[in-house]
Length: 323
Image 1 (cartoon, rainbow, N blue to C red):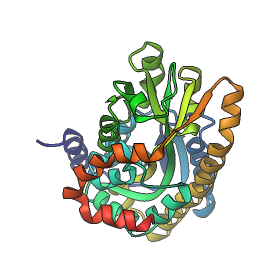
Image 2: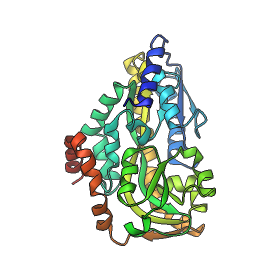
Image 3: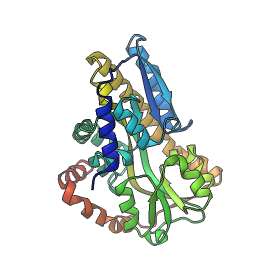
């Protein structure tokens, strides 16, 4: 069965190939709200690019999903309508499946362990695959180590997740992980999540603390269990239609600015993740640790088995790199 998102992206790319690319204004689109490290990093990127292009290139930041959800922003970026998007791992994995393997359950112990992987051979391979779909990976920002929040209880054991209606991003690995844990996961756009939680469509969701706090989800789902069940990246992607028309100096400036802003974003994610627990607890969040991490690891082992036939070499590389 053809992937509908991939078909739309490739079709949009073909339609846009005759459009000339100009470097004088960059539209940088993302879905984060003020207070989120992604939002702040995009603002930093917007300040860095004019500095390294002698003012010849400016950046127009379109935040808070004003230009559509992640899938829509990917489509527009591939077509060259948007030049750059700080997007999400799940939607990108629908056209570049390899990026989804970064989210295998309990793969990374912490964020620094992730950075050494995505900034090396694995990141280069994902970039190569993405370019075939009309997207250039400039760098990987963080979307953090993820935890589960619930409307009325903590979930310290796999049994506590049994039958739980939980929202996930549109990411196959995340869905497979929660199915293995006995939950009932379903994808939903990030912008629609607060309303879905308030209306009772879902009993909970999973995200890093920075996302939970900036979207005020802890006010709706105050029970937060620090499951640390997976990592998710924020791939920063440029339109290949646009990127290929830039001179090398402009490309170096833009990619350098994305990486520099990314180190700020990563640092903010790391520090906020450590500090937010106290802040959120003071605002009413009720935290719990998992009782037996190995029980969660054992329960999600089938997720690795599911993908090893297709991505065995990559999974082996990832496991070796995280040792």
